[in-house]
Image 1 (cartoon, rainbow, N blue to C red):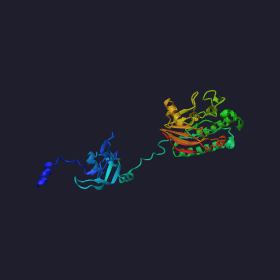
Image 2: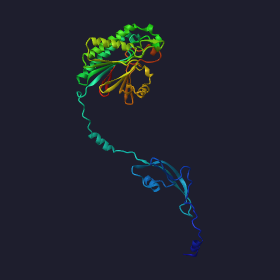
Image 3: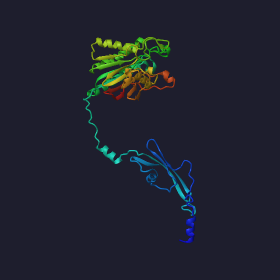
Image 4: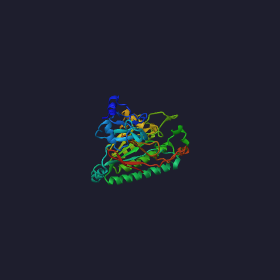
Length: 395
């Protein structure tokens, strides 16, 4: 060792603390590891040379990556000309550096697509149920005849529509029964059987093309035809009737003045029930709401069917049914809810409950058309009930 080297050894005061890298750390990019409550980590690196070995870089900083986790690059900041001094006394140079921000998080579970395709090819469906193993009930729902309304051809045209839909529904029933799919029949009538004189505070009296008693007479004779036709071919027929707002029997001003069940829809159906009993039809059951009630719920083919006209919901069926469920009323537990009033088909899934709003059977509404509305196609709703519903068809 020369004298100058030995002198330097004895006179050296220690490390100068000089940094080999002259790069200012940007705010928010301080190197470190942040541990999140869900077990993930956010790693921010110091300035390092560019790399594609993300996992290796993260493991050097925060330890081994847990099983089931992955490294995801969240952000990167590149300085293409950062100042460096590789050693004390050496000249400063420029060199690209990168600051990385990684997230260590749960890796999404995945199945190789080839395995999925093999599974699809090998999978066998369940054995089809024989049509004769479980016989369902045939449903035909009608509403809003508003007999006496002059629009769309008036009462005569409404009679033609009802009879045509009825005959088509009867043909469908016979075809389904022949295949062993249905046997019994349920016939819901959902209110507004007549136009009445109560709507619009009685302002429609002069527009009616038949009187109130004539409208009720037409209603019960249409119902008589439908029910007797089904009673002759089905082992059992259930007729369920609810009142609407147009067929309220008495109003004072624009307010119902008696009981909620004081309805021409109920009275007309009651007359048909009496006539059929006298005629000896013992396979027909009649269901009406209780005193002062507007809705009902019946069990048909393992399916709870709720019936109401719909005017009481103010267009908010989901809210209305929620209230009925809280009140522990039967209709609040229905699997299927049938309603009318709004004159167009609507099928809505409300949690486990299916709401089916049936079309009207009347001829449309000039009043509604003049307000800018449109008429929807008329029709009866038919379906098969068997621990739920299927095969819905509008006739």
